[in-house]
Length: 222
Image (cartoon, rainbow, N blue to C red; front, side, top):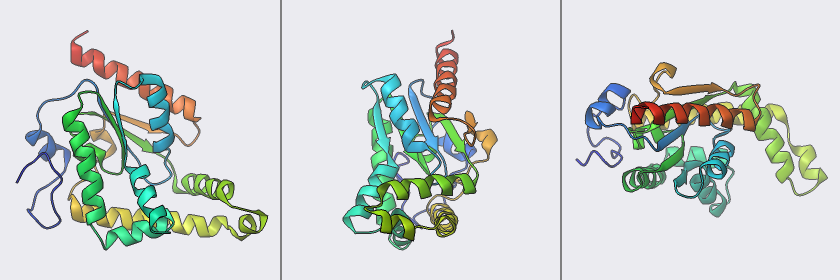
């Protein structure tokens, strides 16, 4: 098996905990970063902020955008698509291969998703942490903004959105653990953990940029 590519489901009994991953990829990368969080955790917003701050010299890969485009093509909400993808692992395989290939081909790389730390194990790893109630509120407000008219807005219920986010958390955890056993690293195995419940997007970006800067300094011995 080629360790540079995602493992097919059931192909080999590989572990994707941090120790196992870094044993296969021992070198770190100064100019690569991964952003991991649960759904509606703010990854996409952070990625766009990093794009503006770091410039176009980096390759930027968004697993969330990739999945949302497929969901839209299929006429599904992202929550419906997550359930659909749990029964069709080819979607994850395509997305994860895209992430892994970008990390291999680009010395300067930023990737966001649920498992980019598995696909780019040499990178500076960021985890964004946010309570599910706050993530559900963000998703609810996003859906209201996307609603076509007032009637559609009135049909939206926060409680239903909260249940959808909780269900997706469970579905995502089950499907990624089946694909990559040990993928859900504890916080201490990430280089930076940011709790963004009370932070603005700008404050979150500032913390991540500061951490990435320190990582590059340590890497370069300065």
